[in-house]
Length: 549
Image (tube, helix red, strand yellow):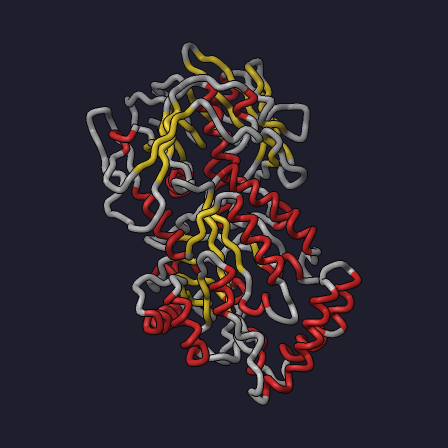
């Protein structure tokens, strides 16, 4: 059992961290004996354990007592690293200098280590130069800047802690964020922003389409972003536009059903308010945010999506700032789909520090807004679904990849080849850490003028080859909830149910049992994902953790 000693303001962050690093733990209780104790901000005087991890960026009385020098580092410049991964630190960073064993693996910008190990009697103390739970709180509440978007920081913090426990031969069990039979989870999602170009006559959307399909296509051809065949498709679409307005030929933007052929599972987020732009945090109304379709236009598509096992969620307008509006938007989708659980993603990714609480109060099952408009990556620093602070049931399924971020000139402006290289790195992260990869491919992105359908097909095939479980966002939230329900035995004689209900159709959970055997440095390295220091079993619905291990 791991014990946590931390300040009251970081107890919520500690609790959520150990939902992501799913292992047995409790808050420190005086007089109890533990396998390891993690101290952030406070160090109890009566610790009974062989291993103590002390996290802090400021100097502690412990440092003075044991003659450790704490040098503050500029954490706003180049990030430290761990075993080849960058490790951005946001809430304070220090190098720790002493006569003990230096942890070279946690390297700083300077020649000094960010961690030092000292022996005090029979106890090993590892002093680390940042506050783990302050970092977790910052990442899950504030997020990280776009320049570190490619770094799943929380997963690296978990890897550091796991490595230290294994290297010090601490036995423990872990339920990793990896569904049985797969390497990771993928949610293919689609924000429905337009649905039909026939709804757009002489407006910004129509003129933008004409420019990008004509002159823009030529520029994209010269830059290697489109093929000659795609340019021809776009010019043909321009010629067909008058016939679409006359309803002589089908609307080439009304292609939701085509995703059912391309996807393994789909979640579509649709807007319930035609012509309403909503308001920004300053009270402004941005007319271009309003949509021209209404729910009646989507009824046939919605029925087909649901019949094929897809999901319909809310693409929110004012739900992010107004609980009453959030509840109305949820109820409209519930009436359309006759489902009890409804998720949401805000249009244009509008969100603030109070949004999660409002969505939770409005009864949403999950949100999938936390991501970047301008780039791809891990805004919350994690590959996993998490519970935002202050919410009771809502889960956040972070958004990692958005088509417009990859290809729009105002954002990354990548060619298909460059974009796939960027995504290869993220697929590697998923195979290494497990968790959830959420993709947003907009409704019209497989149609003229974007024509990002070939790239999307290649991406789905790559994810399938990498061992992904494809599911709807609702199913992903359900799987993570089941994992969160897992409890560990407090003693050998006590067994605690791993799950309170059976979730038919969902992959099982894994339990990794680390036996307290020292592993070699080569096995701990980032490019050695198969670790001989643990054994693994599958946890069925009816099993108990104590019985499984």
